[in-house]
Image (cartoon, rainbow, N blue to C red; front, side):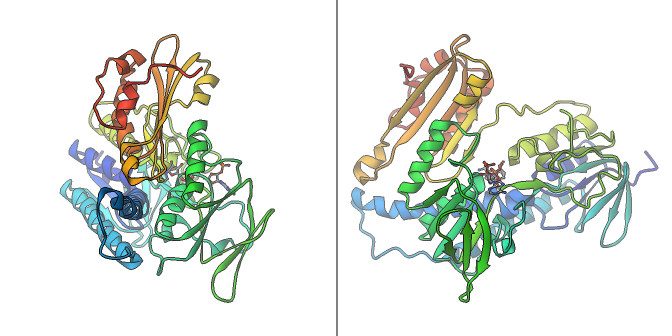
Length: 455
Ligand code: NDP
């Protein structure tokens, strides 16, 4: 042990790396962490947090409209000021990044604000200072990075979700390329901020992998919200027009012109140039660090957590993986993370909340199913006059009566699914749902009052 400068060197101060560093230090380990960008990682700096704040901003548009039905008169036409939102969000991100730093300092973790590269199973080289640190354990927590592959002519004229938070002004028109979480969330929120949004996706429907009924309903709701959907279509080339706007040429159909082209075609693990392969660490097809259930790589002293492992690419999962790693390696309390039952939300409007298996996954796994579903108009929409519906679906195993999956589309779906996730994680049966007394009036009560399975 005396040969090592530190017990743990963490590369990447995002959600997973920061949690691992703090917990390991709490177990008595000497910990150093390196970050080449801002402390906080994707979620805090350019992901979940600023995005959710933008989503809140976008939903005021509806609230102003709905208020009239409830007797409110606004003093004038509501106006939205982009720089005010952008700068307020940037300030909040700075505050949170500061809290992350304080948390690390408070835990006595040494911080190095520069790029670190692995030089061997126990060696890490800091790139600015050239300092070589010998570590008993190395944790790779470098996250992911937006990707647009294969490259297309003019691809660099598009921006990624990294840059969208800093636009100098709100564009009049935006083209969003992709049909996943990021594409849909930004298409939805910018449309509500008054931008004319076109969403172009190569598949025949959005959100591959989500429950089919939810996909279809969200697609229709986005159209209803004024988003132009171009499905089954790819971008071949992007050019800059004399006025600085972009024209995207598609495989078929008319070209699309917009001031901003947001490319959200997925993210790749951040392992390029990290020295991992040379150190003997096995990488997977998209460059992910291959790990076992203990987050251990093919080199015993090197572990990896979070998006860089491309398991379930969600912040709370990275945090748990980091925590489990630190407890297991430094705390003498080994445990592993369950990657199967993870609740997630897509913060479109309406939003999706989802936990467990989709109907399609459950059938593919060989279950015989009872499917319960309900589509209804939320109470608030009666007086506001808004044409919207909430959709809820329970996937139940006929044999054991266990609820295998719950899928919700509508207001507060993310909040509701977090609580439902407890029941599904505990293995709740449909009978457990049925004996739960409804809370009235709420939308969520529908989850415990559905009695007749779909024919
Ligand atoms: P996703 O993998 O969710 O979606 C990528 C989308 O881009 C898919 O629709 C995919 O199509 C499409 N695509 C991929 N390659 C190409 C290509 N070459 N040309 C055209 N289209 C392409 O990635 P995101 O970037 O949206 O998000 C990354 C991850 O971040 C998510 O998987 C999620 O784990 C996480 N995230 C979570 C959020 C949340 O919890 N609310 C919010 C944002 C991100 P196809 O379906 O055909 O493959």
